[in-house]
Every structure is written in structure tokens, then in C-alpha cells.
Image (cartoon, rainbow, N blue to C red; front, side, top):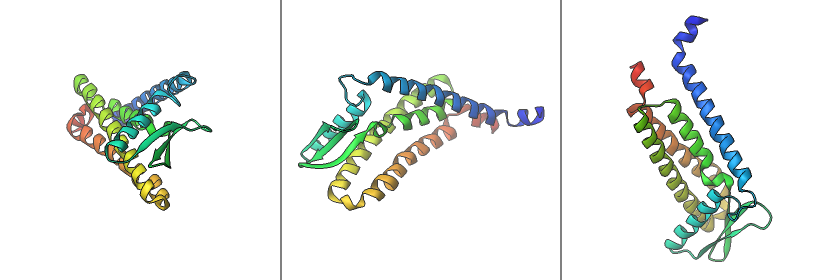
Length: 183
């Protein structure tokens, strides 16, 4: 048993670190969500921010857009040219994807300064890409509402998780100590 533990030490360390970081960040995020109930930002600050930034981007590309709090559920309604197109819920703000990204990077940590910089840069890239994703999804659903299932459930999740995967691959192949130690 000791030989197996020694042989797979790096794998075990990765799994334990990943799960620990993921658990701590998820619990922290859930505490944040619980504390944000009843705040002036509906449904929570991050979802509200993403909604308003989506609105700004839609208006900047020529659509007459607005966002309104949904009256029956914790979400924001995106209205384009007077037509209700999508609703932005807490899951659309990319925080769960960012938590997943950070957990992986920390579990495969490199030098402290490099790791912190890559975490920061990766979060910005994921957040920005998520905004573009929501804008593109809104435009797509405005023009092709009958394509909702393929756009929302296949193409756009594939793009956001594909981006995270590419960021992970760059990290592992260029900056991670763990991979260099095994080489």
C-alpha cells in the first residue's frame, strides 16, 4: 500500500488539493449568495453586474436592449427591441466556472507569483468570454428562437468549457511545477 501511495503521490495530491479548494470556494460562494439575499442588487451582485454589462454590450452593437428584474424568479430579463429574449440567472454569471478553473490551477500550482497572475488573468478571460457568450446567445435567440436548445444547451456551454479547458492546457504545459517535476 505504501508503494502505491508513493507511486501516485502527485495524483493524490492533485485530487485532494482540487477537492479542498473547490469545496472552500463553493462554500464561500454559497455564503455570499445567502448574504446577498435582500441586497439592493437583484438577484445578487455578480448576476446583476453581468446582466447590466450584457445590456451595455447589446446596446453598443445596435440593439435597443434593457434588463429588468424578473417578477417571479431570481433572474434578470433581457429585452431586445421590445421582445423578451433570455433570462440571466445566477448560473449565468460564470462564478461556478471560475471556481472550477481556480481549483484546477491551484491543484497544479506553479510559482506563487505566476500562479496568482494566471488565476487573475484566467478569471478575467473567463468572465469576458462569458459576457460575449451571453450577448451572442441573446442575439442568436432573438433571431433564431427555435434554435434555443442547441444554442443554450450545446454550443454555448461547449464554448465556455472549451475556453476553460484551453486555459488549463496552457497552464499545465507552460507553467505548472507538477508537470515539470514529472518530466
